[in-house]
Image 1 (cartoon, rainbow, N blue to C red):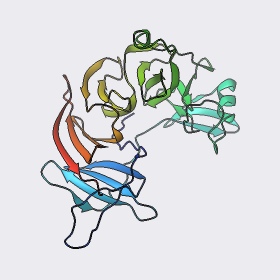
Image 2 (tube, one colour):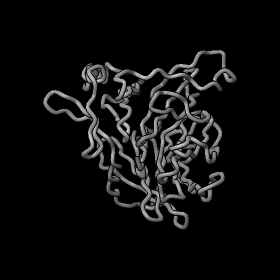
Image 3 (cartoon, rainbow, N blue to C red):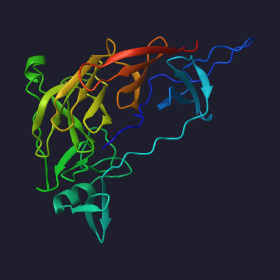
Length: 302
């Protein structure tokens, strides 16, 4: 699944444009709104935000230009994804025109999910929509993976490295789907202290663990894991072999409100909040470690 799209996360702080009296103030992001999104459009990284019931507003920065107002960009087209479809009371996992019928146990698990309240067949505060892998081998229901072939839930084993980190037994925090890629997440504290690992269609772990986060596809051979763990380490993976191709520590500690967008196959833009909103361009070469090439800031309003 190509995820050249914006990852959307609730920001802990709110956002707006300050307009103090006198001469125009520099564009800034204060604390009176509650959501935002980030998009990469040409040379610009655009941060858009909503304040109360006001229309969405956006600030763009580039490596050569400072903050400026821009119109909200069009939403990115969703990447092709597999879906569960129903016909004649029967459910199938489908990718395009290719479909595989689901067994009675998996069908019952999907039917047991309360689509309004998100309760039932799984947990982990996930949405109630079933997510098949694009190869139609696994369906994830609220973070819980099911084998399509075997018609049963997968039994997952946490990475061995947990024994070296903590005496506390780790708990699963759900499985994410990114195309054919399955990423199992684990935690041994109240968070954020999660680790993750790629798993195969049987639930077996592939490769080494890495700090948990959200997958962002760069191309068919590389996926970046945008961190939401306290280590703040970005990891680049080969989605087929699960080999780790490179890592980059973005900062110390959790990155508040972190958003990321694919600029191109070799570049990621990321935005997070410190004293100001930091905008960084990350170079991701085909081999070797990623690196931050440019940093800009959008001020936080008083």
